[in-house]
Length: 419
Image (cartoon, rainbow, N blue to C red; front, side, top):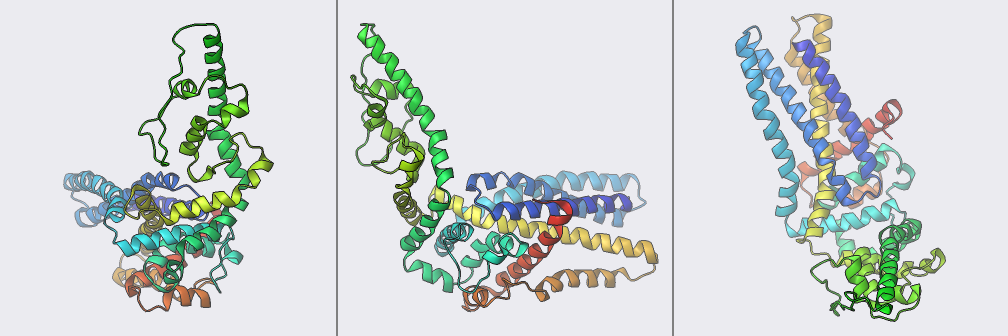
């Protein structure tokens, strides 16, 4: 039975390494917040399996040789541990997002913008060698934990807080210039097909009207004039019927108030007043500075307690906590495998409690002792460890986590092809 548990622990350790490496890859890229939320299910499965293996090992060690009693304990622990662990994993991110105090919500928003700046080279943190290690475990671990780092200290956050909108503007100017093709493609994919459908529908309506066919009357939509929303989503047919009769060209239709409202609702800050909806790539280029201003204004006026604010908090804390969770269960599996391996070589007479203690101490101490270029940089110490205001325990835990994540990622990437 213990041999089977060792095999399962080894598999759990491997899956945790792969999951953590992939999570670091995603955290080290510009992944939409909502896409990262889909990783929660994998985190829940790994946590539940790790807790289940721990419960099974305890049952086997205490009830080994008791036959039916052992199986009752195994089944009972499984029925209790798996649902409880999944519930905790699902509830914690929501609880964090809902109960976070105001200063930490604001810090998470700052970290969200700072992360974009680091990823798109429009921001540098003085004396932190992030660019040199952007594709290494050190850089990915730093970006993944940025939300926690900026929430548990004050010096770097205070600098941003003095002019957050200006800080956001600088970040998004770099972001839009480097993501211009992707932004243009978003317009082509989300708005242009709808505009083309609307133009075809409108042309059909105009033909029916010219032929005197009833049921195709003009039905204008009373659009809000203050920039707010309708409260409902018109269909293409309803938009087409709302256009005034007599428009003769694609450009006239695309420049109508109704089509511009539809584009603004679909594109958000990417929509710029006056920008041709059917703009060419060259025409779109000159609107990038205005798009950056829109993005900066939107993020700097985000309500930390609103829906978008909660998504930001979950994003900036879900990844570090999931990585920490994976490190915990991975370390636990590694300790069990070390002990089992030593017992297989030396036999049961060895004092296992000392081996267990040495293994745990090594796992805890080694990442704290072994540094890396980012954690050891002057900029990191000044921005994230020297303010004297951060909780010592949290700062120490996440320093250990970043060091461990960097080491494991650098080992895992070439061996297991995590990328």
